[in-house]
Amino acid sequence: MSKVLVTGGAGFIGSHVVDQLIVEGHEVVVIDNFETGKRNNIKTNVNIFDIDINSKIVKSIFEYFLPEYVIHLAAQTSVSTSIGFPKKDAQTNIIGTLNILELSKEYQVKKIIFTSSAAVYGENSNLPILESYPLSPFSPYGLSKLTGEKYIKLYNKLHKLNYSILRLSNVYGPRQCENGEAGVVTKFINQMIKGITPTIEGDGNQSRDFIFVKDVANALVRAIVPSDPHILNISSGTSISINCLYDFLAKLIEYNKPANFGPSRVGDIYESSLSNENAKRILQWLPAISIEEGLNETVSYFLASQ
Ligand SMILES: NC(=O)c1ccc[n+]([C@@H]2O[C@H](COP(=O)([O-])OP(=O)(O)OC[C@H]3O[C@@H](n4cnc5c(N)ncnc54)[C@H](O)[C@@H]3O)[C@@H](O)[C@H]2O)c1
Image (cartoon, protein in one colour):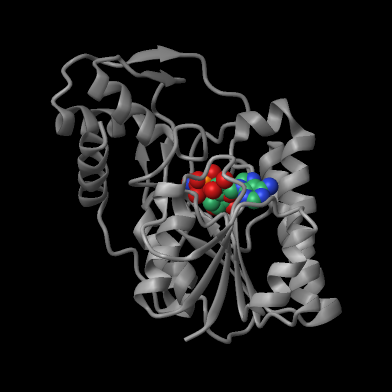
């Protein structure tokens, strides 16, 4: 069992990662500034430090805990915030990542596991997208994630710091906020439950590769092994349109009204589907939960939290 430091561990994906780490018997410490994370997302008794990843105190946490693995999820995750406030996005996603990298180097971490995003690819009509495809982000968020990846690769060259970079598609599930990546599932569910008609941005034919959060957490935990450095897509490998998602949720929640339609969002990708063949082979991992099962569990969670 390993000592694992999880940044952003009180967030949506991070808290599911913490759950799985604890079940597997790892020793876990969490750093989170609760910008979007919540204390009650953490269901187990782990040490949580309420600090910013840019803070000088992070060094003393490395010094006392001496993590073997760092799973770095803390980030500014909203595409629209990154467009409105690109310096805020860069401060967390680039400068904050550099702070974690410097300390990982100094305290000889065995591997950094980094959550990157499909946003690094930008638009690509040749689907599903392979890891080798051109990288051309068109939001500051996509660019800051790509810059994080490049620093990580450079630290590997310069300092032999090992890494797993996992490029996540659109993650959904219990505990998700509405404003981050793929927040559309949470938003539609909460609105339908309250009797508010959701607005689809654009024509609704835009597609997304939705993956259930527990499958993503499982992939991140599987990266906690010695391996060659790698960059892997973590996705379902299929995609559904936003119109289809709307109909599916409406059926589950028994919401009978048709969607409203509004203008499409700046910086949004139209079609997205990532190939997960390399992740399946290298991590010995499979997305185990179908979209039907995942949406069912997510709807039940939000109904129970009302
Ligand atoms: N949700 C998705 O669909 C998706 C897709 C691709 C990649 N990702 C990546 O996965 C990671 C987790 O995303 P999420 O969806 O769980 O979002 P989230 O907002 O729920 O989690 C981010 C966590 O980081 C914390 N945080 C933010 N800034 C911080 C800072 N400066 N210092 C310390 N903590 C800070 C937040 O409080 C939160 O708990 C992010 O790196 C995100 O870019 C998410």
